[in-house]
Image 1 (cartoon, rainbow, N blue to C red):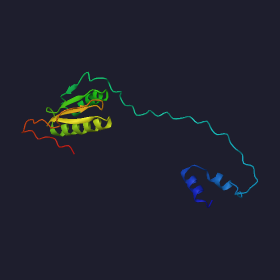
Image 2: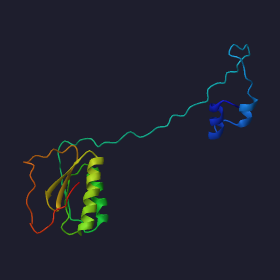
Image 3: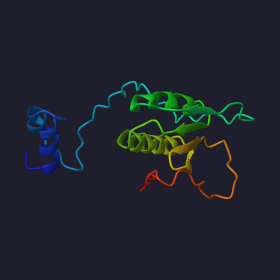
Image 4: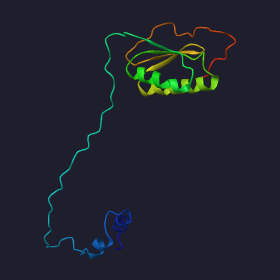
Amino acid sequence: MSNPLKKTMVYLGLADEEEIEDEPTAAPHSTAKTIEKAPAPVTPIHRPAVVRQPAPAAVSEILTVHPKQYRDAQLIAENFREGIPVIINLSQMSDADARRLVDFASGLSLGLYGRIERVTSKVFLLSPENVALSGDGTVAQADPDVTPFTQH
């Protein structure tokens, strides 16, 4: 068993040592008959394709959420996955939970090919990929005493 490939196969459990040692070393031009085995039946694995929601003709609703705790993110995610634009008002949350929720919403919108836009310092709009936003692109000025969130 001097062949490194055979040693590796034994190590990985792909072959038994007895099979490798009992194998006759045949010359390349051997006249020995080889026994052909019928191929084993193959069962294909069906993997789900990436499911993307079909684009509805028009936006029929927009959800506004005033979360008080981070666990309210589930409501945001469920509606956004259905293709509903979501407005998130974080004014009733602590800064730490609000940052966490903004991070979650950013990942959610990225994962579902949507966009997240800051409307004011504590209000964000999650828009699905099938919703186009228009405007001048500037952020509306809110309460100057409130420290805005920094997105990195």
